[in-house]
Amino acid sequence: GNSVTQMEGPVTLSEEAFLTINCTYTATGYPSLFWYVQYPGEGLQLLLKATKADDKGSNKGFEATYRKETTSFHLEKGSVQVSDSAVYFCALTMNSGNTPLVFGKGTRLSVIA
Amino acid sequence: DTGVSQNPRHKITKRGQNVTFRCDPISEHNRLYWYRQTLGQGPEFLTYFQNEAQLEKSRLLSDRFSAERPKGSFSTLEIQRTEQGDSAMYLCASSPTARVGEQFFGPGTRLTVL
Image (cartoon, rainbow over all chains, first blue to last red; front, side, top):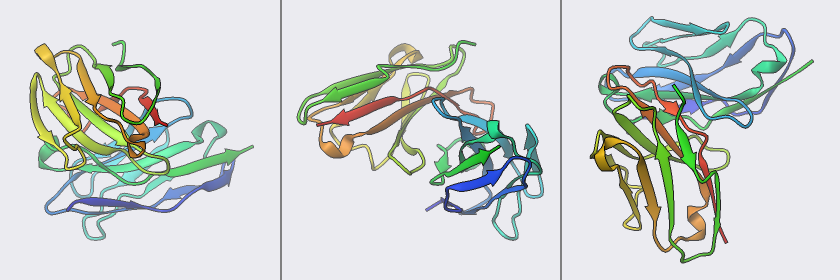
């Protein structure tokens, strides 16, 4: 079946450090890929998405590029802030979004001042 | 856009009792999803509705679980004869059909079965 694998957390970084959270997927076909974020005490919210190979999703300084050849969708940010502390989930859906999201286990990021 | 709301936010019950959760989606969204999330895991799909029609159910959804969405508005998720393994966060999400994979999540209902 379809699945998403994320790097284990927690990840602890100093403010202004570079962030990478790895995500790889297994899917029969060509999924659409997403990063969702869960801030403390809040519900999951969409951070960015990419619907086809080589697309780059970006939002709030975060970026991820859909790499079909490596089945990856790594999340990056050049300079993290304390307010980026949250749990980040990589997810996929198939059939142009007509199937439910399949999530990874999540990666907790803590940014310290 | 008032967001997705879920009630109650917390529920503590004894094993064997029945519980019901409610989800109110964003009003113009015709798709509604239920997920379950346990500690250290990502959300796992349970079931989803297109308007009032329940289109898919996960194998995770045992016979003790039932979901409804009468009139295509709010939805309820009922768990009968709860077990300790049902303890989890139950998440509801809604989306418009046209926006691929873009789901709007509620804050969740945390269920604790003693």
